Length: 337
Image 1 (tube, rainbow, N blue to C red):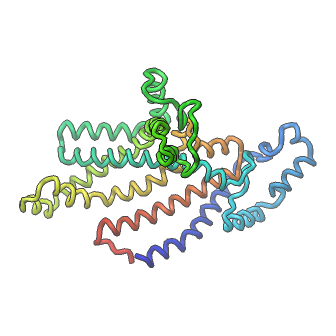
Image 2 (tube, helix red, strand yellow):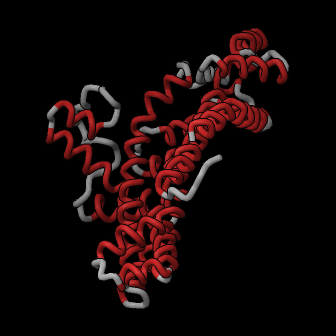
Image 3 (cartoon, rainbow, N blue to C red):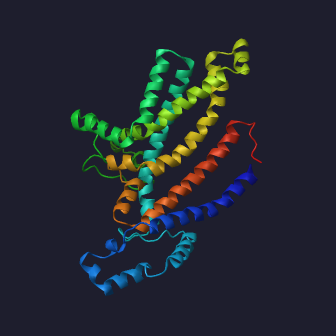
């Protein structure tokens, strides 16, 4: 196991170079001029101002030179400076990452818990109304576009019925907590501010539900299929014949063996939710990495867009590694040579 982890970690820098190279090529093949972000519209016709901006931001160099310089800076942990915010891209990402992480963990928890629960219930009540209802809920969750579901729920629950809070991480004029982790619910708890915690949690649940509903649909169908396959195995019949209580059969024998395919989905879903929370963050005005990526794309902020792409790829690599390691712990039959 240790040698496997070391080998995988040694591959990470090379994979990141591949991701950075792809992001660089795509960003520089877009038919748009980043100078429109760096220089005002009036000054674009001034060759001296344009030349100074190109020299300051390294745009006067050839693409191969820019590529080599970018990789050299990346090796030192420098993702460049944002054209839009004039701050290091890494600082921008660090500032916005806690908001996305808080939303992602909430969606992952909702999607996993409800998905596994519905999948187990559907498998135990196979071909009943409960099974059909569970599959219907899963199908709706997997089929609805998150931006549409978010907009509809926000319109009905907030704008019409007033039973859910509006967009944003906190209520209007509510004070932010002292920054410790950057996740409001955690920071309010650490400060002992329960009213602030409930305010932050109430704003977090609806976007977390919308984002987690997609994952819930996938996990429900996967757990149901895996459970049905496992429940037909000989060792399950043996355990039942030996008088083992049904809840123990389901929990210790069936569910544990049925969770292997689910681990893959959950592990990759964490990275997918972080990188793909763009639409939910836009609908709910959530100041995370997704919103940052959209704002950077609109303003042709190439360093920021590349930084988001590379950080998303890095999260995917770590999620893959964590999933492989979890496999070995859940199923002792697996040996990672």
